[in-house]
Image (cartoon, rainbow, N blue to C red; front, top):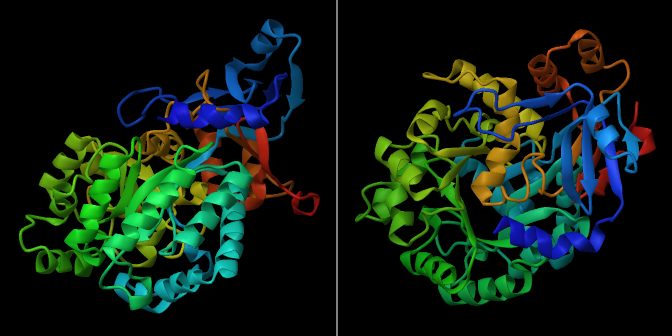
Length: 452
Ligand SMILES: [Zn+2]
């Protein structure tokens, strides 16, 4: 599916000239949780881009000799990484970032849902969409699975903003018909009609795809979940995104609302929502049976470590996910999290695994994989994004430490690729993200004033 989505649009902005970008580069074309030597690194790297696609990736001098006519772009002094993939992030929550110290339901009621209700105002939503898309791109996120709004015009404004920015995005109208504030509820009939309209407008338009988005099981009646099932059966290639096992209080609601369900995941399974290219956010408190069923279905989990810590939701059992074969990607979650940076999110994953019972030791290669290819795989976009394999879209981030910064000082003496990458994850701030490209075209460039 990824291929198809990308190839429809890429020629629009692609240049036919070949460009050879020169900088140390890192990518994980393999899964480091399963294979040794998953990290590929070139100290003097070259990335050859033709018509918006990766034509070659390797040692600069070798590529220079093989392609003497390619235009060289010298980016030494910084590093090239694949564009980041945020597998769980809510567009209407940018303006509630920083509401610390609450647990899930309290935070939803006091912080998130009042702001989400403001998306009924179209001009407010358009401005929020613009700010949100800028935040993604300026943090190096080139691909994202995004919770839309509860209102179709606001969700459409987000799709339009993402398309205008050139980002690769899957999103959808958020569906709920109970348990939230009344102004966020739709009837199943309206939800069906509006979702269909958005699918017709945006699904597989350029780099956009549609994701069926029930907010979470407690907020959706069986009739609403049937709407989700119908949409999936009527349209090819839709994604699914929702929440699962985030918080103990939330989990306790499930047997009350769905007495027939053996566990939380069983609700989604009953309506055909547990499948490939379905991404379940959080899953902090899964049962063994749920993990086995997620793995068997080829569904993935979006781990949101900043949000899990900020809301006190719990420590993510990554080892159990990996052991059972459940794909794990990373999400910033945004409002409940601590911002848009995928480098920071991967660092937080590392730190929390250090203190989690049965925690995993995450090396820099794991962190890079989680921030890039793992997300592309979860979304089914891995034909197109996630690493620098030949043929993929040239989506990349140019990270260059500010002069005089601690990162610059560390990198002066660090020679080992894993060590260099670990220092980037630990110390690179948003200000170090100098340039971001999708399909070879710039989607963000730091302003002169922001440069060091
Ligand atoms: Zn969420």
